[in-house]
Amino acid sequence: MQVQDFLGWAAYAAVACNAVTLAVIFDLSLSSKLRLPGLSLVRRFAGEIVVFLTIGATLGSLYLSEIGNLIPCRYCWIQRIAMYPLALILSIAWLTRDKGVRKYAVPLSLGGLAFSSWHYLLHVFPSLEESTACNLLNPCTIKYIWKFGFVSIPYMAASVFLLVALLLVGYRNNRHRIG
Image 1 (cartoon, one colour):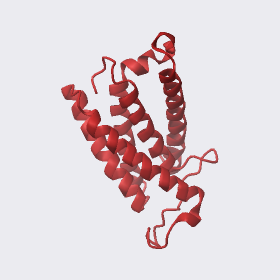
Image 2 (cartoon, rainbow, N blue to C red):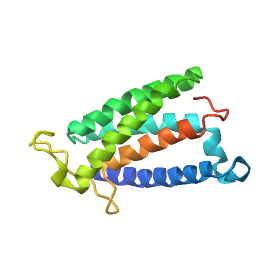
Image 3 (cartoon, rainbow, N blue to C red):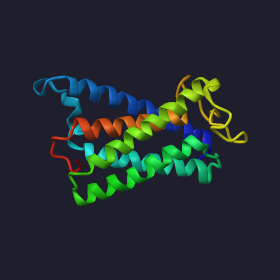
Image 4 (cartoon, helix red, strand yellow):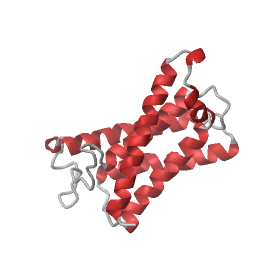
């Protein structure tokens, strides 16, 4: 698979992730008696979904840098610093049925979301980048993809971080394996 094909596929996955995020927000805003029946699988398998999302994002970023030869910038590395342990922590928690993982996973996810959001803003407004923030040979404003007029790699990462945090916090009282 070519890198641009992979990025295109990942852009569709990010938009799907956003659709699920909006549905979950809507579902959580309703009373428990009015919950959306179509989201019952998301509620039931929230733990498995967060593991799948973080492992997928981790493998995707490794594919882009190691096989696709896209050099990660400074903010990409910071996002990876949040995503890689998040995938490991959530996987271990899922396997061991650890209910206390939320106190570690949610801050990692929110921190990753903050850096992804800032990095995305640099893509939208390149003038925000300070000359000392990123390498001149590998600026943080490079858009390897700009699908649908708004989806970039930091946008994809932010989509995963947001949905993971939302699922961990929003569906914490269900009988799923994590948190």
